[in-house]
Amino acid sequence: MNLYYNMVMQKIMASQAEKLDVLRVNPYFNALDERVLGDLAQSTSLRRYEPDEIVCWQGETCEGLFILEEGSVKLFKLSPRGRELIIRVLQAETSFNEVPVFDRGQNPVNVAALEECHIWLVEAGAIRRCLEENPHMAGAVIQKLTENLRTLVEIVEELSFYQVTNRLARLIGRMTPEQLDERITQDQLAARLGTVREVAARSLRELERSGAIRVARRKIQVLDAAILNEWAAGPEL
Image (cartoon, rainbow, N blue to C red):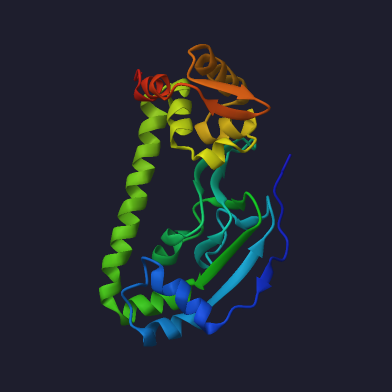
């Protein structure tokens, strides 16, 4: 069953000053002068998405670079049978969908809002023209794409070399107190770990039996960070 939906996202009125403020602090554009930023701002807009609304589908034509201002989104893949694998969860002040902007390909992943989100869109064509006219921008592009590649390599490493319980411990260790205080289902954990619900449930029970965590009312509480860190460190397969 498809839990996601498309709708006509609501566009939010934004001033030129607000657009410039967003572009000035973004790593892709912060080295550009005001004239160039002003031109880029003409192709920048602000949108609002509801929880579970799709921001972009894998395989569709790239609209541009998204900059998350408020809320959180998940980048995910779907198997032919509909099983979900969450690649990353992104919080405010992060960018996504860079690759198709620069390689002119299609969107590589699906992106859905986890809560109400305000997201800036900088149109792909405008970014490409900006890069052609301002070659020094290439350094920022290379730096950010390199960081993204390192993150993906780490994800592949975890999926390849660590058991599910170890990966779960690593995931919990990276979660903020605010994220731990949110209700989370076993299905959601399974999607984050690249496994199925039953295996995620067994791993939760294993961490509970070891004294590392406690799960109550779908919330995870860390009881012993040292034990959790031992699980996070291995063993490797």
